[in-house]
Image (cartoon, rainbow, N blue to C red; front, top):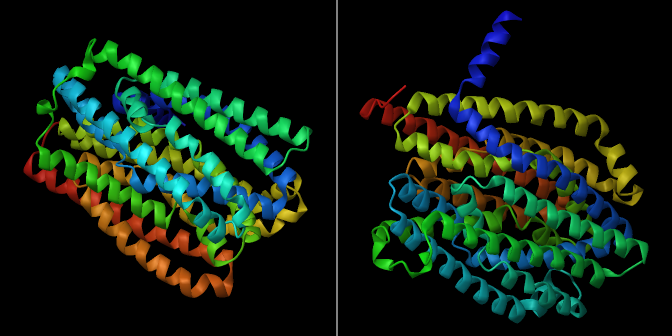
Length: 449
């Protein structure tokens, strides 16, 4: 007991860990409430629509987010790296220039994404919803892209400015609004159009609220008239846009390989199978939601530790973060293994029980992703954005090729198995690379302990 108490005290004295946990606490408290609200909205939407219509809803929302991510440059990562770096060096004008470039780029891509989505709505309805009459739903939900014209940039600025509590409040507001509308839709026996509208209203609220607040904060952080900063102050062109391009390619790989699972299931099989798979992902996301806030709060601390060449504190931080996320993941896994089927039947209904085996298969890959959630941010902090892209691209292409061969034969459980395999192999390689680079840097630049 004494040794455990001493170890706990040592952990509390770790400044990096304390700062990450403090900032995460804001998002975690919001996410805890949002988890409950997301469960409420998913349960009521599932019971209102049934598996097949739920698969169509998933196709509408997933197709929209997929088009958006296809064109996104992931401005958030760029802002965290370069705005944070410039502010650390008290170069506010340079930080303003980066923020301006990021916001304009994201806005431009959002408009293009909206136009492309409206154009491709009939294709999405025919291929993924298996119902051309649902094209109007695809076009309608596309409005969410316009409302979220600079969301990634805004969120990143709030992260750099340690405004995690404000982000948490806005996130909770969206969850309350969406859940309330879906419960109302259930009570009045609304149709799928009503449910799509509920999700759209939540997206519009979040996009406008987070951008408005972030750009108001920019005036306080960077000075009035920050948007007039010259683009001549941007980091070297090749370095700056190479980072943005690598982030975009990485997002595209994740989009095709990881974030479009329901679209693939609908394409290979049917919206009914997609409905089962959506519930499996909803249940498994209960494991990842409490950990997700750590991703955004850890990245700035990892980047700061690398900039300061604090290699041993960096190793300690990674170990402790993995232990924290590992404890939660293990507890949640035990619950899902023994009570997962009962939870699905109780909340979603007996008709969704075929989703239970997929949850257990997904648990393997998502469990590892949870424990080593810092894998890609670590390499970004170490200045190696290309390696994760190569790993994800190679393993992702392999996964997709196997999907065409295996999923039509063995169903959505095979899709779940392939996704878990993708996580295990890609994350394992990225983590190995990260620690290898830290070791190399320690030998070249010992830094501080």
